Length: 537
Image (tube, rainbow, N blue to C red; front, side, top):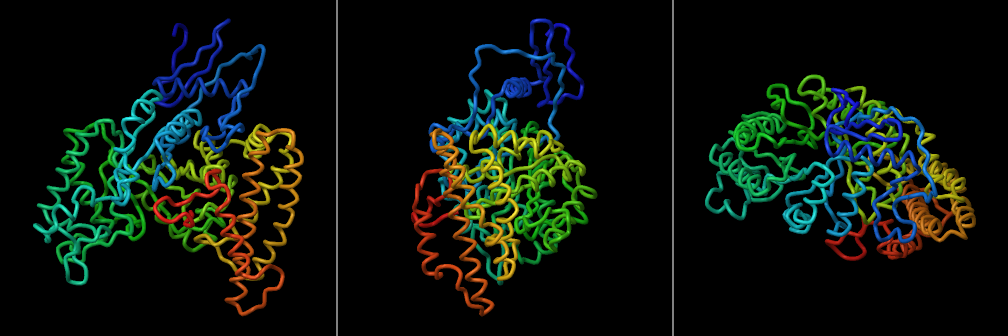
């Protein structure tokens, strides 16, 4: 690349866009950085990567590529690098993932300048959401784009399985109520040297068999119960015990796996930072404020739970480890939201700005194709804000809506703003308070939504692609409107107040069931494949 010197601090993901006479130079220090530069250049020519090209988008597709007879390029001298090092999508429970849609997801990740795909080793031991199910298909596509592979998730039990060891070595496992337990949510006896030695040996075997792994998640089981055995309790709090175990694992793996970054989790009863034991500088952490409220920003202190979480995050980043080694597990498409359209682009960007000021290393979120259309804007704005949290949110939203909804943009913009202002405060999701007076005010405020959707339909009537997208908004609207009315009825019942404005609770629940059954594969409501067709997330 004659005549072009790359900045020393460009990093693995940064790139240079530069014109040189009749030539355009696009270059990064890594293949991934160069690829990001190519997509950034295409964006300057009008391309937009709204979502993966999942089948349910039909003719609307997940992206916009303009047709031009000629291309004119202004003088370029641009250097870009991401604000956050870790920009992750989790497969997580993987209720709607298939090999086919995962390939589409990976393709979109590179276009959106995300850089880490995280897949469970074997989610809850069920065998369905498992890295080995997809690795042969995904590794070539991830490597082609230079994307990082993270594997693991909840699952100490994957490396010390109860069914294999408990009968011969019950002392290796946690004590609860005076009895050694082989329950999967119980953490093994981390004070037992033989158990720890076997645990580490099995991890090493897994990593030898999976050399593609860049980041290895080593997390306790979900809903972890820590051993009550005297020797285990003597090691300290669950956080301290996790730190000690990580130190053993890191020391043993370092020689054979110097390229693998080990990651742990701060979560539930081990989210508070340790006072004694700190992780090695090479180790990464995922901070998981699972029960936070989305009625306000995590750092604002408007919620006591948020205030406690943010205090813990500050404790880790200021006293325990480098903030750049911390990723925040965002929950912005949380399963507990049951696919309700909790549209919060301003909150996402606001929090990312605060995290960037703190030096936090990144952010991660779920990614389910089954409800992607509901959370499309969340994924889109998160990807953009992880690259640049100081973007102009108003301009970014306008660009998104104008390109995505065309003639219906005016009405969709008003509708999405209304959803953002009302829905996070008016549906039954963790951290949201509901009372009859507040709920009535939210219902009144949300009334214009129906007409806005209707006008958007009318504006898009001659455009089949846009009409498809409006249909999905309409499905979301009817679902969330039904939810708000149900919560109003329940709130009134709890407060022994009559409810006359809306249908009976029985009618509302029947309406809910009909909404669930509509277009089971339209990307709006995630249907839990592990159970009956009427179970939803």
